[in-house]
Image (cartoon, rainbow, N blue to C red; front, top):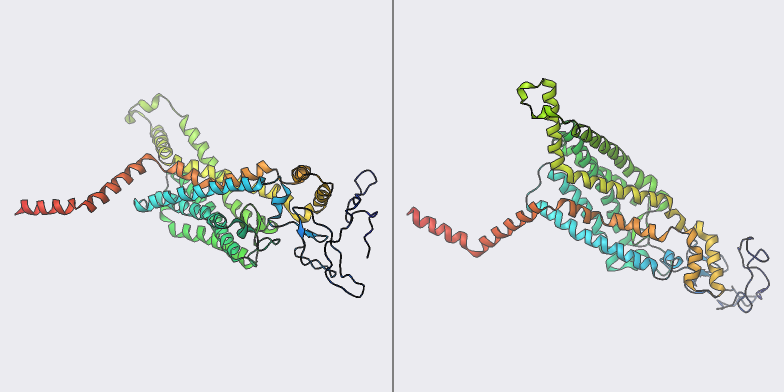
Length: 436
């Protein structure tokens, strides 16, 4: 039961120098920190000293039990949130605090936009599409309330185990809302693009007559994806400060359904703008001629061109918003698909052992984190991806909250002030006097 100080560290690879294995340092070899109980041999297990940020695995024992198989090894565990300890000290805390703040701002601004369209009575087509889109974006941004209230309580079920829908009810609720709002946002963004295309290219108001179908498809898709994730138990925390569908199932259950809407919508959007560009360059002296001197075909071309320009003047905000939403979702998906899998603890296991060895040599945490950095998602790219999707609410506010809405709010408040001041009643009495 005596530790062998001249043996290599368990699980090390053969690529180290100078002898091909990493050996225990003198005086540090398998230091016994606790005697978990006396058995027939006097010891029931040995535990190695856990250097910060690692903590002792409280369940590690002779039968192979452990608190968490992914984040624990050899009697030591990375405390939750584990990935935060693999970057420079405080780096992810500061970065995700910035993205959380951005999402909170988006929540407030998207709420203002949503209430503006409701209170000012902008619920008819095509404003109703913007209203429904802003409702989805507000729900997408409002989930930030959960981590703002208790960030670590959102990420972690206890000291070591990350949150899942099984061990943390808040994670299940927040993750379900986020999945539902994300899919619904993409669905109504697609509806915006479809309406713009039909109205601009085909001069069709088809969308205005199919709202029951749109509600069924858009909300139905969001409900189906969310229900599938919850029923299969795939909601968990793995990244940033919010719970989402697990990396193993995220593409099949989450990103592919959104891609099925976003990419065709993007191609349709490109077709719309190519049509706009083609019509716009068809200028000439014939437009200044009276309609009576033109052939029927030429008159139709001019009429269609004027219709296209008028459509763009009216709907350019919806077009810009659709592009922003598509770029944000696509960039986030590519990051999630290509980079985020690097942070899977199973794939990182060998590299984490090198990180442990670096700490054992007495090096500072930031130095060891820099050594580990090539095998982790780039810090700047990680924060940029999260910041981009967190700013969607702010973007739609900037795009859609025009000066006309400010003037309408001013009129609304002046009417409320007029009613509360009693002048309306006073005017009514004066009218009655004149009638008499």
